[in-house]
Amino acid sequence: MTSTMSLDWSEPLVPGEVVLDDRVAPNASWSAVVRAGHVLTIVDVGGNQSGDCLLYNAADTEERYSVPDTLAWQGNAYVRTDTVLRSNLGNPLMTVVGNEIDRQDTIGGACSKESNTLRYGHHVMFHHGCRENFLSEGAKHGLGLRDLVSNLNWFMNVPVEADGALGIVDGMSAPGKRVAVRADTDVLVLVSNCPQMNNPCNDFNPTPLRMIVVSP
Amino acid sequence: MTDSVLNARADARARGGQTSEWMPYLPASSSPYRPLGVEALTWAETVAPGGYTHKVLARGTRIRFDDPTGDACAHVIVYNALETVERLNVADTVKIPWQAYLGAGHPLLSGDGRVLATIVEDTSGHHDAFCGTTTEAWNQRKYGDARPEGPSPAGRSLFVKAAAKHGLAPRDLPPSVSFFQGIRVDADGAFEWRGSAGEGTSVELLAELPLLILVANVPHPLDPRPDYVAGPLRVHAWRSAPTGPDDDRFQATPEAHRAYLNTIDYAEARGL
Image 1 (spheres, each protein chain N blue to C red):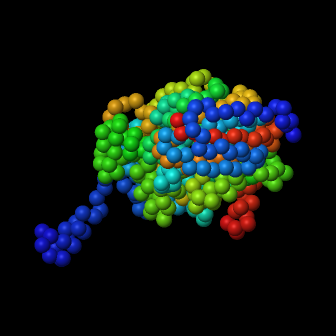
Image 2 (tube, rainbow over the protein chains, first blue to last red):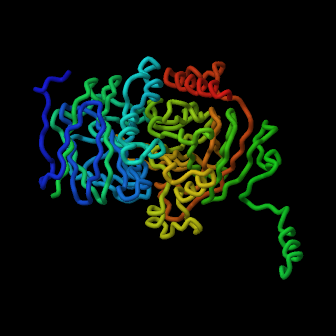
Image 3 (tube, rainbow over the protein chains, first blue to last red):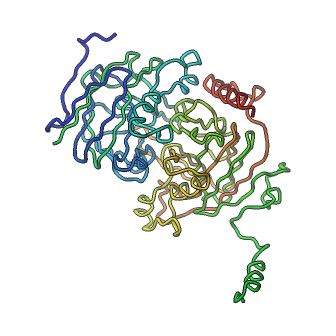
């Protein structure tokens, strides 16, 4: 277990009136509607803790986050400051307005009990996974397996090398590092505080996340 | 003359028996483009530029895409036809093989830890698993027209219609992959356009489970040409066998091995 000494709960990356301030326990899920214009700061409290994230238009969840639209519109595989997080219709859902690590990931997808069997073997089938979190958190909003698409991974590091080799490697984050995303419309945000114990996406040590929404 | 039912019927019937550049061929084995060495086809079609197709295929079906002009771009989504909630997961498809660039031997994985289809042959090597297909917003901006019935329909518009014909809704459309127009990722993450490998290349998929396949043949989103340039896409399919222990790819990597084991486990349990 990480000692409390190594946790940095930090503060909002963008100033404003705090409208929501939640702490997400290790391995747990979280969701909230972030209103248009509000800014969500996600704090990597323990350092190198992947926050798997899906976005939906709160008024019509058939419109949801789209990795390929986000990447094609910006012409780049990585998420950084000013990246517009686009929907499957090509519309902006949120925009990255602050980011304290080199790049954020959106190509690595979410872990699951099923994919863990491919990556590590059937002996880890019993482990918890982000897809499990997305299903239980999504169910609170009427969302199911049909609504799970490729996601964002805040604070996770997935480089693509020259020959196409790709993988989750040691993170570039640290306790208290933050990312801030502004809602461009009312957005339902689902987060899985990644429980993965078989790769470095959580430094092999799941830690909390802090979710702060401000009205600037 | 179409002024009576009899005349209208005669007029309609006189239209039969013709051919066009883009059409399905029935029976499939009558295809004028039948691949060499293949006798009995189960699907044969030329998909129009800007067109789409879709099919439910038996486990073990081999699906061949041909790009005769070098201007096709086959955007593809695959589903387990028995449980369409199991569908292509592009993130797992690149993460689990530790490889972003699609090519021969690459599995198209579902989110359920199984192989929906395997890329078994590839003479192009110019493909993409990052950019998905086009949206109406994209085509409106790029071509000034994105109407599904217009001259420059978006890939997503075509997927919406193809999916609907199997009872699926827009929420059932995950990110897609595309064949015959390639990109590469540079050290900073920027996409470099590679385009086509030229005319006359082909890609073959092997259905590892009963498959619903949706195909949209539209320009790649990053195609730098200002005009809507698309070529015909030929599709042929025939019965073969799914990947099994006797195939080299079955144990080519530990990840692939376990993916095929999961797939066969599912098929055996269902009595397939």
